[in-house]
Amino acid sequence: MKALKLLSLSSVMLVAPGLAQAQTDPDVGVGQVLVELNCSRCHATGLTGASPHSMAPPFRTLGERYPMDALEEAFASGHITSAHPDMPDFTATPDQIGAIIAYIASIQAQ
Image 1 (spheres, rainbow, N blue to C red):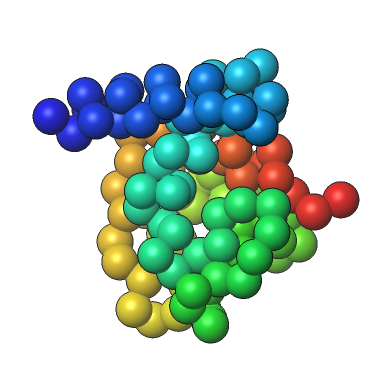
Image 2 (image 1 turned 60 degrees about the horizontal axis):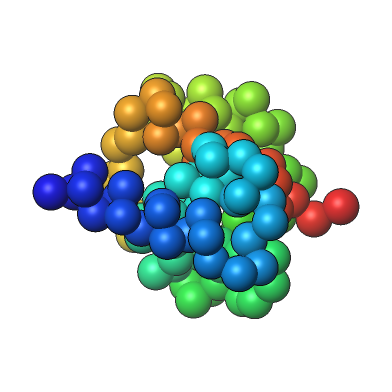
């Protein structure tokens, strides 16, 4: 059921207006859906806005703190170091991790 929900949401995200990046790279669109579903409760997951949780960095600034390959490795090993101690555990498949990293990389502040 969760996979079906993810597929439905990713389909919506791929055709939503204003998501040109997601339309050109399906991994980016899937990653966006995953972070919005799992991370947006605490983190700002888009190009603008503050994080709802004061200790959770906006995803568009993660590249300032971590190289993307190190972030991918941390996700894969399950060792995400958190600045906020109440961060929930998050487990993702390798394909999901790739999509999340593709999305995070696509929104990094220049």
